[in-house]
Amino acid sequence: MDGDSSTTDASQLGMTGEYMASSHYVLHPQDDDGEENMNDHEDGGTKENYREQDIYLPIANVARIMKNAVPQTGKIAKDAKECVQECVSEFISFITSEASERCHQEKRKTINGEDILFAMSTLGFDMYVDPLKLYLQKFREAMKGEKGMPGVAVGESLGEDLTDDGFANPLPAGIITADGQQQNVMVYTTTAYPQIPTVQQIQFS
Amino acid sequence: MRHNSKHQASEAKKAISLPISRVRLIMKSSPDVSSINQDALFLTTKATELFVQHLALTSFNNRSQTEANTLNYSDLAKTAEESDTFHFLTDILPKKILAQDYLKTLEQMQDEDSDF
Image (cartoon, rainbow over the protein chains, first blue to last red):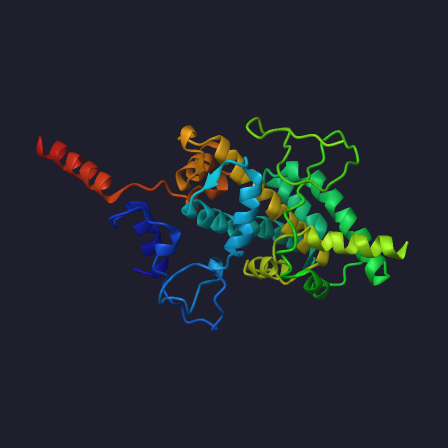
């Protein structure tokens, strides 16, 4: 039996004497290219070789966004944070493969912004599209000012300027309401998704 | 004017609270992905932030133990199960059971078998 299925089976059967949180999964080392540990999970000795699908965003960042999203008095269990961390990687892969497919169909090699937005629309995240377009616009304007050139795709290297600086601020996560008004985007917590009845609508003027 | 755009640039940078390089790494681990332009990378990173908020809040509001005020793994699993948007997560969010509950269920099933 190969590594993948045994991990899945174990998690579904819960055969240890406690809930199996993801950090307790035994990860089977693959013959790997010695990729550095990207996981930020506590996990004794099995840190060396992770499969590609085990790359996650840092749990501190994820946890902070979650904390800001729920009501102030709310708490988040540790296994919930780890779980969302995994869900995030799943989400990114989900969007990326859809976008990549469209790219290939149109005989292009580089995934662009439109591919991403289209993928989100197709996969049921169309409520993100309008806010994202606005964020992108602001981003492009800011970059234009700094670099002195129009918002042209300069490839991945420009992304480096923005990396790993993730600890600057609480997330400005304003959602623009669907009536298309330009509104101030600098907001602190949650989200207005018109289609989602359980999520509170927050309007900003 | 210059001051304004410099300010905007630093605001834009602060507006992202996830490491873009890590997002890129995850994207590149998808099969057949050759290159990703800057817009796509930015949009994906931003969308990921929205996704985390969306998932956390929906699950929190949807939680089974409302008095506890705590978001648990099971709340997330429940949301994935019940929501169309988050249904793609069901494979990685199996509902967990305690080993003793499982063994009890197994015992019951065996008892039923032995009745025949």
